[in-house]
Length: 278
Image 1: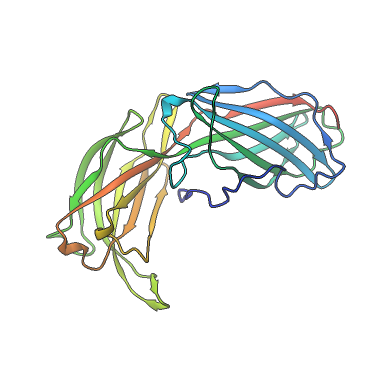
Image 2: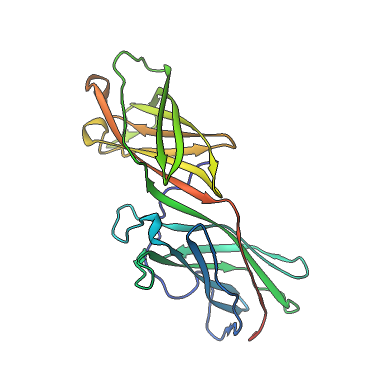
């Protein structure tokens, strides 16, 4: 599975995505907010309509995470894998979702976000609904940069690296580097293969959190600005973080990368409420 990049749909919106709310009913009883690991999920509104069900959530991140409302790319608390079901076992498929930019939360000194998720219409017989989401925290900076050199290494070569660092106090170890080629990059429509580094890191879990993605952002001299290729892919055990380099990166000696990562709260949030106001 590929780690999701920072979302591009970050314009603030006020109505649930892809749901016509004209004439829709608004839920009058909403569940109590839930908090885990300094992240609080609150259901702000539910709208029931013939075309679909729209749910608006607020996710608040405590100051201990040191999230900033001004960081670029934005740090986000992303609701993943949403599941809406009722007491009879019916599951309503998600159609779309969108979210807002982080804003300062004056009450806590942290940040907060609003997200809108659209689902299929719920059954007229439904009496209790349950929403389950997993929250992923993105763009968390590591406690130190990553430094290495590609001098003396050839394309196709893999070498042990074993650099330790921490992501929000979670110890991680970047185990190896592989010098590969990015073949499908186009410069002004012309294929231009680029050297590419691939870093391998074991997925770790600690204190209810799981590492889900690592990204390496190099200094400008080490990357081809027109490319900007930066990706991570994960399986059950490892993450492979890829970043394209400039054609002469092998000759620059020491390369330095800023490291950011994503952490998933392992325990899903589950909110249940009676279907009232429908």
